[in-house]
Image 1 (cartoon, rainbow, N blue to C red):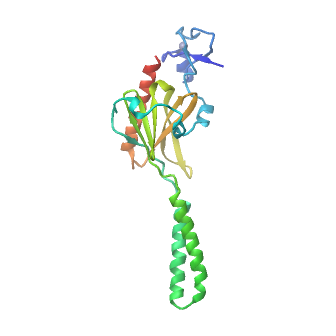
Image 2 (cartoon, protein in one colour; image 1 turned 45 degrees about the horizontal axis):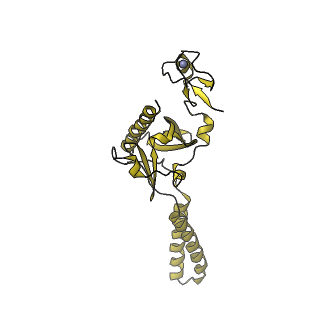
Length: 232
Ligand SMILES: [Zn+2]
């Protein structure tokens, strides 16, 4: 079912509830402020956010290329990830290396039974190495263009024209580690071909990487603004 919403930023309903008033598609004017209604929901709900997909799946679905987006309007911005805890591959690599080192010490001391733990050490070390190799450590880079934005994920590039974006909004969510707030994720949420996608960049409260995230927030604001202008 299609819906309409009140686009008036000063609407009393929006002031009270924080979201635009929603109407059935056969209503033409807002009952709170009288403004002419716009098509669509006007904001994302919790279900949209839960079902949000990585932008990468637009690869190959869109017929647009970066060339279609026109001249680049600014430098690429690298998306920042939240710092993770010590990962399983690192633990495996270190444990494996320690077992190998200790076993070789005993082999050197002519305790030949130490060959067995040495082999175990090699297996653990190899598992860690394998995990490490196949981890998704691809950098995400976004860049503004005249008629859209591009997102580079590893060696893939997704071109998203503003005209394909139905709605875009920027929000924040706090990140906690062991109950302590450690920073915020800035999320650019957009709907495109009726699916919802999220691009996020992390800002640490410790101020370790604020510069690149500041640039992401500026970039995201420009995307939201450009989509708004296009849909007016
Ligand atoms: Zn209204």
